[in-house]
Amino acid sequence: MFIFLDKAILGMAILRIISGSIEIFVALLIIKMNDIEKALVVNSSLALIGPPVLLLTTVIGLTGMADKVSLSKILWVLCGVGCILYGVKGN
Image 1 (cartoon, one colour):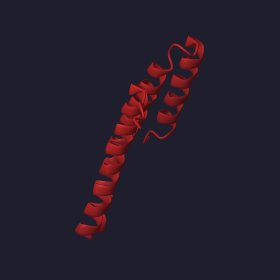
Image 2 (cartoon, rainbow, N blue to C red; image 1 turned 135 degrees about the vertical axis):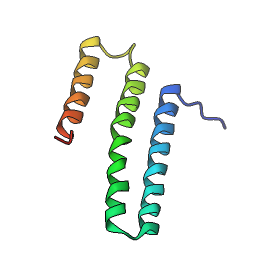
Image 3 (cartoon, rainbow, N blue to C red; image 1 turned 90 degrees about the horizontal axis):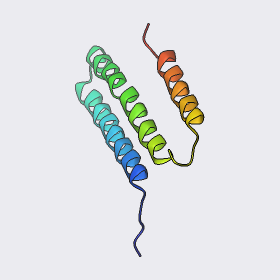
Image 4 (cartoon, one colour; image 1 turned 45 degrees about the vertical axis):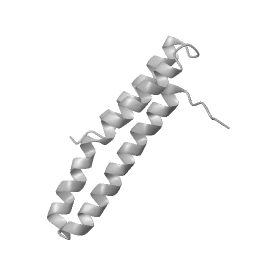
């Protein structure tokens, strides 16, 4: 039996798999380095990966739902993502 997946679902899942693989790789790298200063630098570099993945998966999901959701609700979701990114900003 074949299961056909929506392109948006597949795109979101692939992005999350890549993001999770990077997280696992960094965890193994931290263990291998065994140095707290280097581990903190590598760990903080993950902050560069998280927000773009969040934005891309949200955009892919919203484009997949564009015909089912009103424009005002899409704008509310984008505002919410913007608030999340503003809230975790490092200042």
